[in-house]
Image 1 (tube, rainbow, N blue to C red):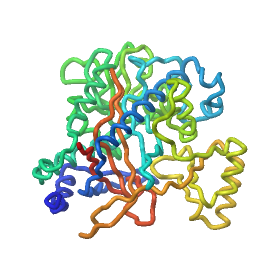
Image 2: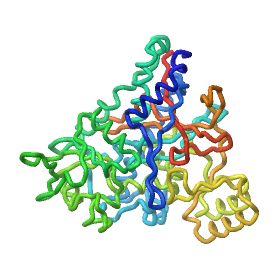
Image 3: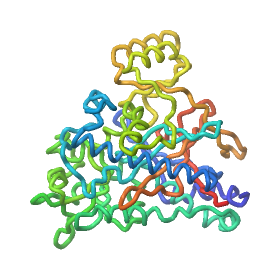
Image 4: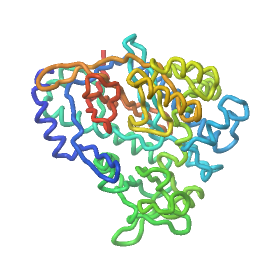
Length: 436
């Protein structure tokens, strides 16, 4: 391990050369910075990962069934398990997707599930990302560079190989492909995760394309070439729902594909992930996932949610307002670490303002107990220090449901912060599944 750590500077230099950067577009300004890598890996014993794997597969299976149900029979709403208001008022619910059945009935082909390990050794799910979860490329390329810099480390430690992510992605795309080539659809160079789009296209043997490269004719999606257009059978989109089709969603979008929804509705192209998935990863819906698992699968949830309160319910609202100084409050419409407020950090006046806002718009928030999750060692200025870290696990759903034996571990660079998101200045490290 010492040999690997000695190459920290070299590894980060190579990551920079490859363009492993994270861009943030905020307030009309695009800022790009290196995504700092820490070489001390997170190590998860294989027997512990087996439990995570089983729980993640169960969770994503139930979430896929939920999305199908919401856009078709709506049994879970009719049976009173999930309130109507949490479906139709969700910003992720798209009426335009009603009664559309995607290829092979798969909605969330690539799910990014965020977890933390409590100091009690229990893993807690923090969030489900079912729209366009990013991050798989970072541990993938970091592991490759680490192997080059310190091959002896990987001879000494028996670590599950993570180099098959491109093959897993290709297999997932091939399974739902409706006839044609596989394409990774990027909004372009100034997207925050553009490096990932190009890298995954290379790894999966797919074509990387922007909106000008694609067009729809007679409800079929085509890719422009120097010769005849080529049909597209599977489109792994890295563009948000609202910008995908200016004739169906946001009319001002310049990065979408006109009439793509017509081709999708006709069953002539698979979209990965499916439009409308946001109805299932709304932070308010998160509260109901254990109930979904019971409802659709007849099983108890293997992995726990963080203890969560829904101010929508009077009892939970009262608890939230009475204990706001001990809880973390999350705005369900925000992402990327934004809209997260720790009650203990607010002044008395700010707490009262937040209470009033919750009273007036209870559907807008969830409240959670602050989980004292594990700190992991990182190198900082040549010294080892402890920082909060989470794990984004990647679950791929195709012919079967598979959990990638790796993951993106993100850590806070601020010793006083529980927020680890890249957009909030965090770094990342590799995740080793260690064989016994």
